[in-house]
Length: 168
Image (cartoon, rainbow, N blue to C red; front, side, top):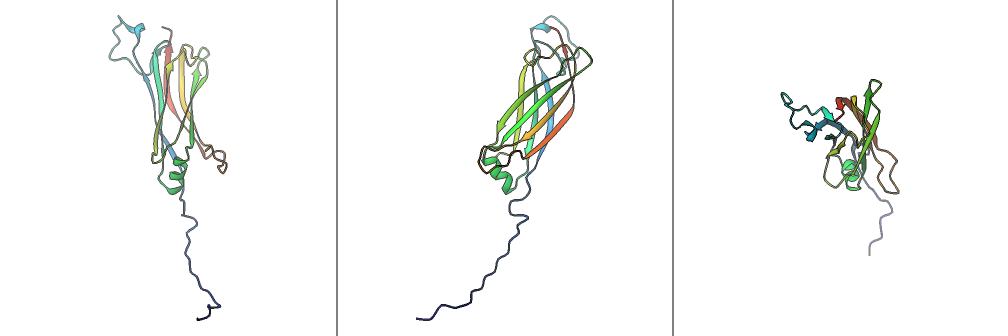
């Protein structure tokens, strides 16, 4: 039997900066969608009911799209069920309008990289008084409920919509 060699040789090539790739997200399509309710029956609202002007009893929704890049790290985070929190902030413009927030949270799922987060209710549900509001969405991505996860993965915001609430 031949003796084992005393010297061993090896070669590897590692790209440590690109193994998992970057993980990031973008926010888009901040949308407010009012509906028509019984308080408008009998009125001729022209040309159409604005989705940005709602009665305090009228159901409306506010939504936002959150899109993640597709990298191995992002795929892992989606698979682990990362929490995505969005706070829709209604900032009163003028003394009569209140300032309130509503929260929505989802958990990511494997192989899905785009999510739409939506809150639906009435102005009364959100405790909004009659007045004009600036609307913004503030996002927090993370944590993942896992012992090895870091606390928060990222933050973001999107603003620039207006909502008017009037008493029904």
